Image (cartoon, rainbow, N blue to C red; front, side, top):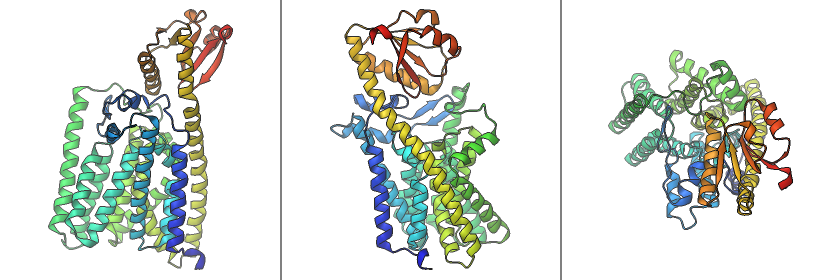
Length: 467
């Protein structure tokens, strides 16, 4: 059993090393990138509060609002400040989450550390914190507070924990749409199963808290429905409904394989609760089902990017840590070995995908803004910029083009917009969005150009005689 134990000091030291390494990655070569950073380039970078998204079927007005705190920081308009803020949020969330895991596992440091390693090496952990525009960053922070406070309230029966959890829950409800469902699952499980299975033993404070959470969820639904029917969307921003739900599920589990383990665990726990009347840790189980519920909602909405599923990882990991601790201390050696092998495979796959996202982000940090500075200098030397674009185009492309146009306007750099391929040949600098149709014809028109820079969503071409 020696290899299955870990001392407090060693666990804390490894955790500190993980946090330090992640912080270095998050802050490395800090700079703006073209795309969703448009939401900060046009707000907090010029002294305006940042907002979430309301429209095109989406409603998360507080998803980015926390970044507005940077307006009160002397250098808060810089990319460095934004990423430093993201790093501080990551450290704070991780510390709260790690302490939650230690309490849930009764200070089993090995189970807690393995679970935090799963979190840090998930496909989306670093991705979420390497850019401020991911609402999942604030969800990680708030969900950690909520789960920690509810766990403490369960055993210390202090009103202050319910107050902190409620404030965090209300705020978090408006950071991403499916969150209300996760909170509703936690509240319903406590209200229904605890009263039924525990013979009605339920404190007034606890009952008031969970009823208040359900009321909060109902209010969110009403407000969301109002905005939805006021301006019905033709498409859901960010969704990819060209794929069926089975492809979405397969893609999600391939990109975030830990969720396969979480799904299997949820099925086992649902069977145990419903048929075996296992009510040992319903609060932990409610966290697990909150994560699975969030995952299912994202399945239905049709989002396939890994970061959309990060809240499902956060909600479900405490339950994983708890039952990992129980399995570790049991005599089920074959099951334990199978789980260890599965964890090694999951961590390996997730790490590869995480590294890919990190490399992509660092490439954009190193190239996007220097490319813009180069274009600005060339225009001041007399060259003209031309955007070739055919609308409508992808939202990410739209954000990229908006960011570039905004910077050019701030620098008083003139530019033109054309949508005919036969007008390209005489232009000195052409910016072309990714995914253009008739690519072969476009390549012929660009025969006298060289590709100066390729970002994630746009290509910048310069005529060879202007090189």
